[in-house]
Length: 241
Picture 1: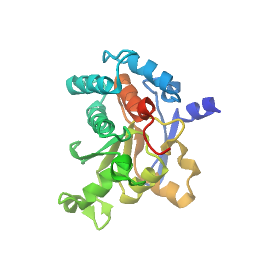
Picture 2: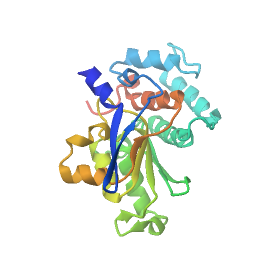
Picture 3: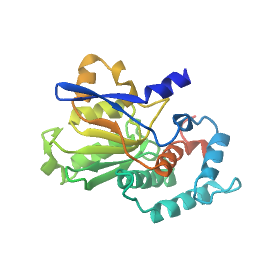
Picture 4: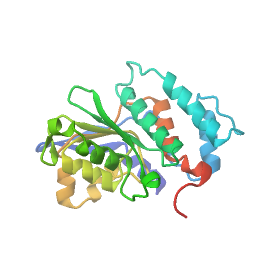
């Protein structure tokens, strides 16, 4: 079953207007990497990062080392989306440091400029809906900046939501409703909705695929950090019990 889920990520169907094309994604990291179930698995992967993390590091030290690495990281020309992956990962780290879940998201305008940033706030604000993308779009729509980019509740063409992790069903549909494109750093073999778009009701599937939907062009280290920040809740078992 896991192998079937992993192979499903290799081909993503994207619709542009009335035409369809198959976009083949060549992942930078083996997709089995993005399945992490235990604290032991998580720590092993954290130690393997180029951040200097050791098995004996407390959570605070682990986060400090990731923060130092992200701060110093300079996106290069090889991976076009690393600038957005870094920004989304920094947002994810902010959430983890606040006691929340490690997922971040940024909104990009038609010129490639980041115009808004946010992170998951479910634990911090006791809100079931405040995933990273939901927080991003909700806070953006309440901001003064929104008037320039919105037509009532629909976004004007050219905006992209870039997330550290593949959006879940709720967030993916919300992005589709506002009319933004979707890009993300790390795939979600067990929880992402983009790769399962064919399971949406036909109306929502067509709406989602009327915009560009794709995994970002990100470096292996940005993909790994995005995944490990997402699953960092395993370090201290945070969240409802």
